[in-house]
Length: 368
Image 1: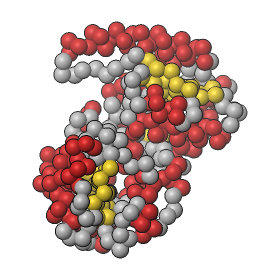
Image 2: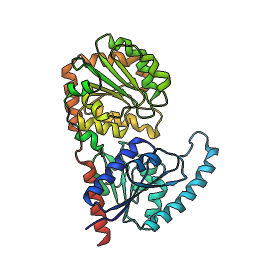
Image 3: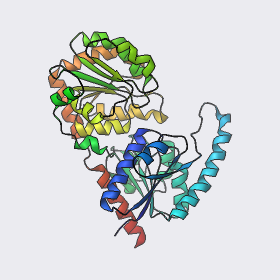
Image 4: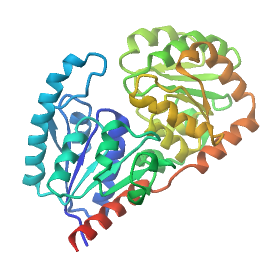
């Protein structure tokens, strides 16, 4: 049985967009003539990234609730109602076989309307702690694809499928040796390398911690690749100029090389980053962002710490603790090997193909 028309909805951050594109690419591999339409939120990252990847996208005027200033939510509710009406029209006009939600503002109204008009829905929940919208949508979703154990806390157990989170093809296919990857990035292959990556926009705490710690770290012969994010580039990059063993840049285009080159990664604990660390088996220090819904990054990181598969430093402690943590880990080859082995053991291979299997099974069942 073929699946001909699929809507994929969500976005907002790379953590939602990369898995969505991976699912779309896997669907195309299975059926090159498949018709895929993305539904995103106007003004968000997906409105640029999705067309750049070769897919059509329609934007909804939807935004998140302001939990601190409740009076501002009248506008949010008005936009949500308009978005629901538009989502319903999009689904019907497109004649979707199934609607897939990957998280982000747009996934709420789109999946809600799909469920209302009896179109099959699948949720791809990336985090170890489900957000409010997905918990609500999960009550009626036909399938929930997850990456962590114990997700029956949030969703009906009989509809949960363990698939893992899809990882970018460039990362899974890269097989360059560590020394060569260091060389290609402009580092000395004989010296240890720590890569600090705060996402495409950047993470203030990670950047502040590097500024405070970089001299102490490099004094031990350790090299630093520092991805500042575009919001902090002008402020941070000049602080690394002229310092031996440090490269600072706003954005890293070859994350596949970074994962292969780094002896240690320092990053936030977003679901996509963690899945990538698991696939490549790179030891990591995770510094969860405290500014996310349900504190889900800390819970993501804790899931790895519980398996002795990563080290966690809380955001409030990052500036004071980073240098010593990096130096201690890089001086302990046995500890690095243990972290690498344990994080690799948590990897879910072929997650995108598993999710496509779920999509096909769901559509087959609904059409019988």
